Every structure is written in C-alpha cells, then in structure tokens.
Image (cartoon, rainbow, N blue to C red; front, top):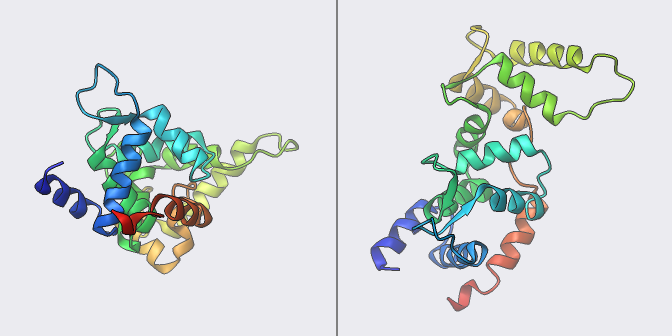
Length: 204
C-alpha cells in the first residue's frame, strides 16, 4: 500500500494510532482470506461481517446486526471494503459521544430518510425484546412502549424522531443512545478484541 493510501486510512480511523490502523488492515486481509473472483476489491460480505459481530462483539440480534452492517457499508454495495472497515471500527470501538449518536441514529433510520418513524421503532423493539410466553398479545405492550418513547424523545411533537430529537434526548440521558436495540459492542468484547488485535502493534 502506498503512503498516500495509508494516510487516507489513518485519517478515516482517526481514533486509532497509525500502528493500530496497520493492525486492523492486517486483520481485515486475514478475515477476507481467499478473494472472490467477482470482486476486484478485497471486501467482507454480509455473512462474514455479521459472524464477526456475533462471535467477536457478542451481538445477538440478527436485525440489529444487519443494520450495523448497513451503517458500515457507506456505498451500499453489499460489502465492507478496507476503508469502510477502518472508518466503521473507529466509531464502533472508540467513537466520541457525537460520533456514536450519529452512528446509532443511522442504524435506527432504516430507510435513510433522516427520521425514525413509529413503524421503525415498533419493529426494532419487537425484535430486541424477549417475548414472554404468558403474553397473549405482546404487540400491544410494544405499541405502548413506542408511544411512551415518543412522548419522551419527540421534542418537536411531529410523531417521529428527527436527528435533532434523538441527539437532544441522548445528551440529556446517555442510556437512550441504544434505546431501540443494542448496536454497539459489549465493552468487555472491545477490550478483548483490542488486546488481541493490537498485541503486536509496537512491532509494526
């Protein structure tokens, strides 16, 4: 890789040191392994990336893992390239509150229209909440929860959450960052991943 290319990756992975970026590059190429003949650029497909989210970062909700994939996949081509890998992990693992607010909002905004609708909230909460066998109609409880959430977070009272609504709510109460499902890694998983991935960073 040429120096300008490396500098671009270091800029994308601004929350990592130069040596850490090199470690993540090496890991990416190890994970890609044999390159698919139809792909000119090294990349991770959706299945392989979701396996990483599950096995490495302890994520369990398929719907939410799919949305995290979409948040990483900036060009919407169905694959994660090296640039998307470095830039995505920079926020996913070490992002500031501002970066995480934007990341989580993009995960929750399914259709990319700049707002989280009542329907999107309902589907995400339905997917993330554990169903109780005694509940006759769990959907009713979820509908109530969506209504309560909207009442708390919909500051402009338009029946949906804009980015401004979401940002204001999270700044007032940080626990609302993942209000509609877990889309950030388990802290212990981050420590384990970084400990293993950056173990030999000083030698690079």
